[in-house]
Amino acid sequence: MTELTDRYLFAATRSLPASQRDDLSRDLAERVADTIEARIDSGASTPETAERDALVELGHPASLAATYSDRPLMLIGPRYFLIWKRLLLFLESFVPATVAAATALGLVIAGGGWEVIGSSIGIGITVAVHLAFWTTLVFALIERYGTGTDVDETLGWTPEQLPQLPELRRPHRRMDLIATLVWLAIAAGFLVWQQFGIVWADGERTSVPLLAPDLWSFWLPYLLALIALEAAFAVWVYRSDWNWANALVNVALNAAFAIPVVWLFVEGRLFSPEFLAVVEPLLDADAEWVLSVLFVAGVVAFSAWDAIDGIVKAARGGGRGTLDFPGNRSPRRTEL
Image (tube, rainbow, N blue to C red; front, side, top):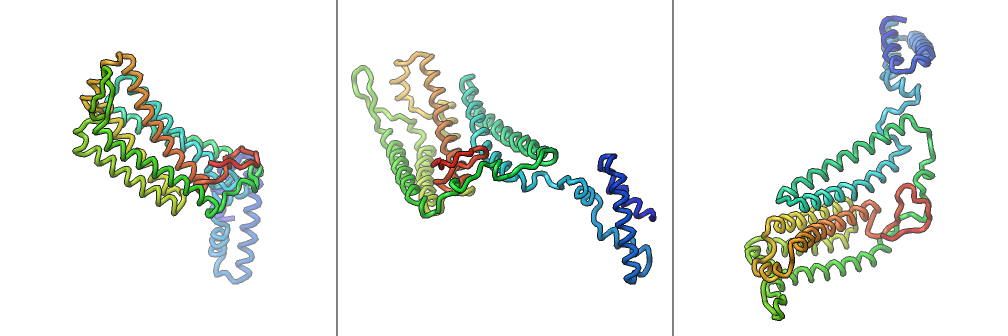
């Protein structure tokens, strides 16, 4: 063997356990020698050329060593990819949003201002990144050091968990569309009606706006436009069904609603002074604090729930499907 072959053998065996190096080195040396001899017999110009061509034919030494030691050159291979993907999507669909909502609620309770929004979003993004990193790391370690298992058995998959055909899901989507449009129409009507709203004070009816009239300069038209976008999006989902693009749009629409509403409330700009003047004398400080926390928590929870619902539907392949999360071994289909 020449120095070139020695270098190849060293590169191929240096990452292996000591107990395997001699065997691989001996096998490779025999393969290289046989290949060189065959190439010379077939008319190679020089032994040096035959040797180089033999090493090129063997390929990268690291790849050869990985094949010899049955060590995959991939982060997560096909054996565990589906489990990793479904688990990661399931966790990412609600854990970051839940942590962000809990953070926002805690900051509001602590008396935080508009910085609540930025802090909660930042923490939610951080949690999502950490969740993806640690979940992937665990599966990468399982891929390299775990024992082989049957993927279908691990997933708990059965034919009953196959998603429904699109034409069978369409009646359910129609009901979802009708319910969404009715709800949006009520919300739009409320934004207009609240300007002439009636509250009871000292046994008398008083007409005062619920929301600050100054909001008509931008924020209330903004919310009405957002409602129109939500209606158009609901029609689009009815026609195209849920997918990852629609789920992301749904997340953006919910954020476009929750962030301004929470910010306006924290800044004291959401409700009209007239309404507060009527209501505040009826509440003590503790009641005001509890109602404030419940309001913020309700807005965040509603938006997070709707966003998560869209993500889950996209993960299931449509608005109605089967719950096939890893580990669910029951053949009974669960409607979303």
